[in-house]
Each structure stands twice: as structure tokens, then as C-alpha cells.
Length: 143
Image 1 (cartoon, helix red, strand yellow):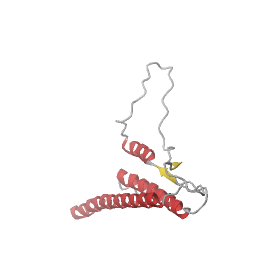
Image 2 (cartoon, helix red, strand yellow; image 1 turned 60 degrees about the vertical axis):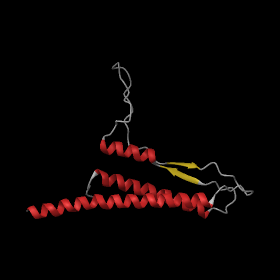
Image 3 (cartoon, helix red, strand yellow; image 1 turned 135 degrees about the vertical axis):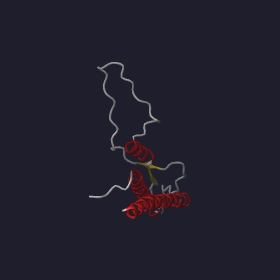
Image 4 (cartoon, one colour; image 1 turned 30 degrees about the vertical axis):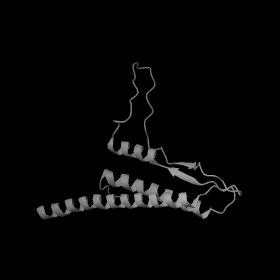
């Protein structure tokens, strides 16, 4: 059983999990830079994260709602958390003679970008926890 500090905390935790999964995927690409016929893979999780945010905050302002003009129309499908990150093969890079299309420069750049984003999420989580701690400290002074 865990204590939910805030909705933001659980969203940040999910974002960190996705960033770690992407970091592992990029590290796997770099590790297979010399494997014949290897195609670099990546993970896209922005849609899953937006769906998670909409679920947590009940924010549907960017979505059009399906109009039901008749009671016999089917109800729209409920959004659930079954939306998961998608894996895809990165295109756009020339394959070498051995069929491998891993570009170390692209992989290290993507790894650096992912690392920076992960650190930003960690800083946001620390700020969120700091707000929670200051509320706890302030309530201790009142009593």
C-alpha cells in the first residue's frame, strides 16, 4: 500500500518509468551497433502519457466528445489505461553493407536528450515532494 502524495507525483512516476524504458531501448541500440541486420528501435510514449494525464486530471478539453443524438447509438468507448507505449523501428538512416542501420551519433544524441528529460522529471518530482513536505511541516507547527 502506498500513499498518494498528489496526482502530479503519480504522473511523474509514470513519466520516469517511460524514460527509463526508452533509455534501455537506446542502450540496446548502441550495444547492437555491430550486429548485422539490426534495426534501431525506439519507444514512443507521449500519447500514453497524455492519456494518463487526462485520466488523472479528468482533462478532456483537447478531445472532441462523440455526440449521441439517439439513445440507440452505441456509447463511446471508455478511455482506460490500456494505452501503452509503442515500439517502432527508427527509419531514415542508411544501412551499412551488413544491413545494420544504427547511427551512433543519433543514438548518443537521443540518449542525451532522454537523460536531460529524465533529470527534469526528477527535479519536478523533488519540487512536488518539497511542497508536500512543507505542508506537513506547516501543519505540525499549527498543532
